[in-house]
Structure formats: C-alpha cells, structure tokens
Amino acid sequence: MTVAANARNQTVLAFDSLAPKYDDLFTRSLIGRAQRGAVWDVILDVFEPGAHILEINCGTGEDALFLARHDISVVACDASQQMIHTARQRMQAEDPHADIQFELLRTEHLSQLRPSELFDGALSNFSGLNCVANLDHAARDLASLLFPGAPVLICLSTRFCIAEMLWFLLHGEFRKAFRRTSGIATARVGEFEVKVYYPTLREVKRAFSPWFRLNSCLGIGVAVPPSYLEPTIRKRPRLLDLLRSIDKRISNLPLFRTMGDHMLLCFERVEGGCW
Image 1: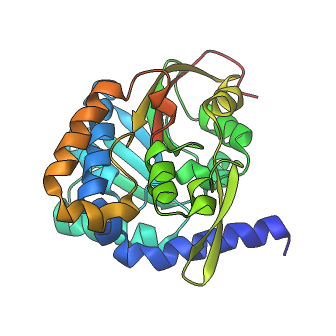
Image 2 (image 1 turned 120 degrees about the vertical axis):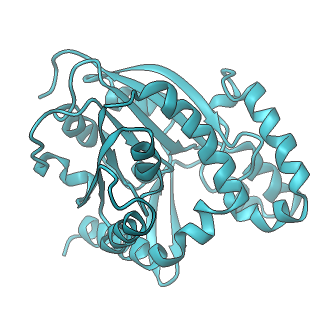
C-alpha cells in the first residue's frame, strides 16, 4: 500500500470511529448549531425548492435532511461506511420519505458516479474537502456532474482562525495557536492519524477556476469559536448570542471572511472546460 493510500484509509477509519458520536460532539452542540445555522441561511438563498443537489462528504446526513425538508432532492456521498450507515438510520427515524439517496463514495472517486441527469448544484459542508489532497481533480470531477450555471457551496476550514489563535496564545500553547498556518497538519482521532489540508482562498479559487467562478466568500465562526470550546460556551450561553451577532456584522468583510473557523465559498459552474 502506498503512503497516500494508507493516509486515505486512516482518514476513512477515523471517521468510521467518529460516526456514532459525531452528532453529539458537533451537530447538536451549541457551537455546531450556531455555525451550521449560518451555513443554512446561505443554503436557502442559493438552492431553490425542486432542485436536485449533490452533497459530498455528507457525514451523518444533517444537511441532506435539511435540504429534503425544503423540497430539495439530494444524492449524498461520503467515504465513511459508518457515516453513511448513521445517515440512513437517521433518515429512517426522522424522515423516512425524504428524497435522499445516500452513497458510499470517496470524493476522489466522484468520476465513478453515474447520475441519470446532471445536478442543479452541489454542497460540501464543514471541512470535508480539507481531507482531500488534490482539489484540482475534485473540482474537475465535480464540474462534470453539474449543469452550467449550477451553484456550488463549499465550507472549508481556514488557514488562519482568529478565535483559535487567540485562545491558545492566551493559554500559552503557541504551537497549537499556529497549527494550521503551514497549510497542512496531522490530527489525531483516537488511534488514527488524519492529514488535514488548509488551503488559502486564493489556492481554492485557483483549483476551481478552470470550471467554476467564485461569487462570494463568507466567514463561518469568526467570533463564534471552534467546537472544542463547547464546554466553555455551555457555561456562558449568553456569550454565544453575542458572538453570533458579531459574526453577522463582520463575516462578509474582506479581512474577517477568511479568518473564521471556516469559510463558506459560493462558486458557479461556468461553460466549457470540463476536461
């Protein structure tokens, strides 16, 4: 097995191990709901009822279920078998008639997807693409699955996170404060190691530019902190309301939009250039 293949397997195994507890750790957390709520506001502006959407890195299906509740059909893919299993269980429990098709598929293998028709848009939420080493190939394969003019929403972890830097600097943990700034880091998930890539906005735009045009960028979690600060936020729930209101005011400003925990990019599929 090559080094790259082993790294991909480590990533899949890590997310398999996270699947049973992911919703408790992030989806249902105060911080997770606050950050996801900001993304959902944009989703409702971008995707129209009746649209047919491709979701990559769908995790436990939270976003797919949200889309289905708004009359949007979804083909939702993930590399983790346990994430897909959890997503299917959730659909059966929460909305068994939802127009969602869950597929076990790595982002690196998008070209293997054979839909009966092109998609009206695509979504990748909360850092799924940060685990993909080659964004150029992912963008090319994604472009081949979309109608011209289709919107694509991508939420990525940023290279420079103000809240993270300040928190760790104040606690004297200088290495952690700058862990993202090299553009690549190794995260430990139980017994597994996951390579995480932190591309800049310019790098993402360049990777997608042959097939997509960037229309907007919004900071997600600029003042609202990363989810590992959930215990602190739970002790001060009113603080979260203040931080959310700050985010609404500053998250689209040029400096802050790329210095949150995540950045939400809205691309548009352009004519030609698929191969």
